[in-house]
Length: 370
Image (tube, rainbow, N blue to C red):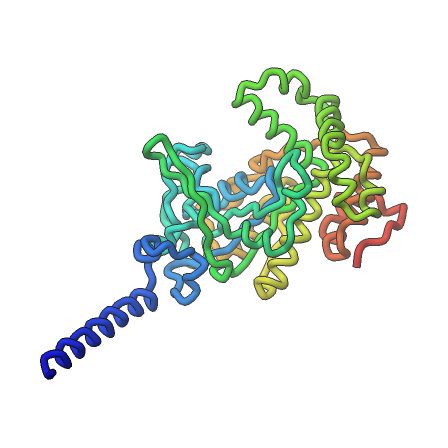
């Protein structure tokens, strides 16, 4: 009987010891242990952040965030970050796609974000590029009409690229609590939508789609034909999905879904930083300000991010923010109708932020959504 009790007691002791070891791992989770257990990065909320804090450079695609982050890197001589580990900068300053393995900004966060260029991190804050959600080109409204919680989830979603074995990608997430500030890039929406078309042509060129390229040349006429075809393709779906008043105002403007996506994206970015992320400090980064008064506005952005210039800001200028303008691709009548559509769709806060780009509608005194 004593032997049985001894064996039972020893077994209980082993169970307790194993449990303590398991709890110890959970108390101090680090990369490889979590990855082996299949634990998502969002479960790391108890882990202390090592090194600089994260700050976002949020941007709707084709707004110029890659140009801005590259300039910040050159001025500071320090690393910046990105959610997209398949598109990185090499040591010669060229953008590369699916060439180099993703390296985490923080070694204890193996699901991202990633270093845009593998150099030394800044001491206080590291800017990280994110495009969030609702940005797909020429797509069904079910893919771009996103709720706030989906938008936030995608803001912290990362792509990891592994160059070995023919290359592979995997998605991961990080906790939004590691982000302490946010800069939001704002490019003229009229320019942004044409830039989306230009980027799509580059993608089609890479795929060798000569028929598509010939159908939609890089001209105002080619752009309007593409807008017209996308409008026609999703006419019924968007009529059913959009608010009736918004639909009536915008159903016949060029590239209506692109302007819808643009306004929705900026509204969601405002909502999550103010409400879901407890009103973290934010700064609007208008690309036109950088182009017209680079030194002043880049200095303000660096100060907001707590970054120090290793190279004088004065050695750069607005020409380095190489973002062409496309206002002349629209007629005056088109610009007024598009401006009124965006103003009606936007809240008062967003309407004020976008005032320089929607001012042509002011004469109509169109009310904004409260």
